Amino acid sequence: MPFLPRHLLIPFALAALTCAALPAQAAAPPSASDPELTAAAAALTVWDADDVRGYLTLPTTSLHGASVKWTSNKPRTVTPTGQVNRPAHGRAPAQVTLTATVRLDHHQLKRRFDVTVRPLPEREPMAGYFFPYFAGERYADGEQVYFGASRGDDPLHWDDLNGNKPVLTSVLGESGVRDPFVIRSPEGDKFYLVATDLKINGGKGWGHEMRFGSKYLEVWESTDLVHWSAQRHVQVSGEQAGMTWAPEATWDPKLGAYVVYWASNLYAADDTEHTGDTYPRMMYATTRDFRTFSEPKVWNDPGGGVIDSTVAKDGDWYYRVTTDDKVVGSCSRDVVLERSRSLTAVDTPGTTPRVWQLVDDCVRTGVGTDWVEGPTVFKDNSGDGWWVFMDEAGGRGYLPFHTDSLADPDWSLPSDYRLPSRPRHGTVLPVTAEELARVRAAYP
Image 1 (cartoon, rainbow, N blue to C red):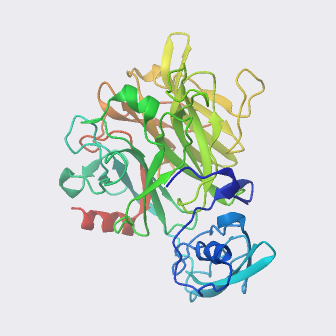
Image 2: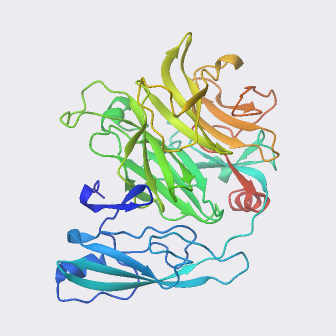
């Protein structure tokens, strides 16, 4: 799918979504004598209409410059702008009819979509951990997605799943995936896994990938962490980007969307060969469904290279952990902890005060580790502080850093731990006892 032009950008909340020419789904078929109007109506879709579990993307433009206006017969359940209020747990699913009125050159055409909104799941306490990761290019099948599971509710002791073989494998793009990140929806019963489209083993090498690497994300989704959708290959970066690395996402309730962020080298528009001096910046875009994304924007550019950001929310604060290239004293290329009350806030290099406040720099220095990257942050299910697993890429692999507080960190490394046998950049996701048992049973 090509990068979408500006005339297809679709505003919602504070973000903009793009609407591509998508295949029509089962719905009331359009009919009109104007073929462009008919095509514009036919291009509309409402994804997962029979199993709605979150906010919907309802595009406001379509093909040929047509405008689209939506109405809902139950606006308290699904609003005309796609916000969804699900029935309470134990209630019956809600049946809602959405009507799109497509207008082009003073003509209009209506198209109806019947959607089923699922009731909310029952909230269960977290009682274990799930760990998707990749194993690295040194292994023949290492650039695919592996799963690990904690031994009960213990974040320090793990087992490899699926016989230590990949569970999700890429068949699109570069046919390799790295840096898998999994996020649970705010309602709790849908999961999205996004990953870098990159294959180094047998590929074109790091230099080429940093200049002309993939502009796509690889996406899978699931409702139970066991049954996964077909892979989606979705472009998010523009032509000025050299690569799209280590994507992660955070739900922002103020936007009513997921904020998805990744690292890209950026080049001047006239530097088509990508030969100019540059460095990786953190970019972001917004989405509701990991199918349609807003135009990317710079999220973090401190004037030097930054990669591998991950975010945790604690109270009113978003805490961002990032691998940072800048040098502070004797500390170089380390992990930096910042916080902001606004997830999509952007600081201009050299300006003060910063919206993203520096909490801690040179995280690894006090605990005696080598260069680390690929942080993943999660709260201990017991309430006993926070974990930030970081990859000592040139040494021991993932190391479990602990702190009692993100606001006032006191980093330590436990002496007794056993992580999966060969994890590289991945995600640790707290799960319920039922989810943990299900994953272990599916991938023993």
